[in-house]
Image (cartoon, rainbow over all chains, first blue to last red; front, side, top):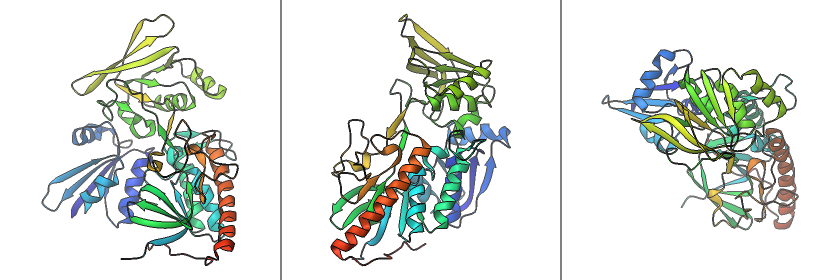
Length: 82
Length: 326
């Protein structure tokens, strides 16, 4: 069960919209970090994901362990938030 | 065992072709379900700016066009499910589709799975994918503020996305294997950005070289002189054409051409009766959003006729069939 979900996005990223849409359809709340508005947090996104891409979804579990999903990848996102 | 859900029409893919088709089918009360494994709106949604879609004199963002198409289709009752269709099988009256949500049955099917950007298939490409090698400028361009980029390709997409990337990058080397094939309008725009974009024609892209998980340069060959060229860079964006999304049709019996595009007749019907194709995935498609939308409308009308004929022949109940529970 996810305790907290954070998504790193940009304004023009269609895949980011798909992740948000999918989470909303599941009734899940998330915090969005828009890297166009907060370019100072790009390094954080890179460090977490190891990738120069968005969306990056960080799922914090009840036991505070974290799972990182890079891209719009339902095969990984669905079990991560389950 | 639970009975499979039956649908009048299932559209595989939710890009411009099927969203347009869904507007037509649902307006005629033909129950329609779309499956999308990627982005609603397809490649159009990840295109920075669309300047040649009729009716929008100032152009519009691809993402906005995709969203408008989705809203219009849903307004008339189209359902979009986020999931994947893995295979299709002809069972006569119904087609059986294996999906990530289980098997479903459809009286008619529209294949509109479009295409994805082609890969170069060179050393370093896979190794640095997502960490310096990219296929989506609108997704990943923001990571290259004040950086140096290489863009590979000479068509409309490569030029359009290079122009978009000038918002971030300080310098762009555009590597073109032969000559530029972009529209005159885009080439004119390119001229306006020559302070940032340098075009290198007749240069192949041979290898992406990096160190410590970071791309450092692209190595190519000047095809006129045969000399090696090196382009120092922080990242590479690749736009060299399209690959059709037809892998799920292997062994289905739906005929493909030599480029793995779906063959259709003049009614946009494939070799499998009741299965139609439209948009970028169709053999003979012109890979334009406007044509995809037109083909979607045509396919919808052909599907309507097919269903009418089928109902007369098989005396099938005139639906509504089972609709997915929300």
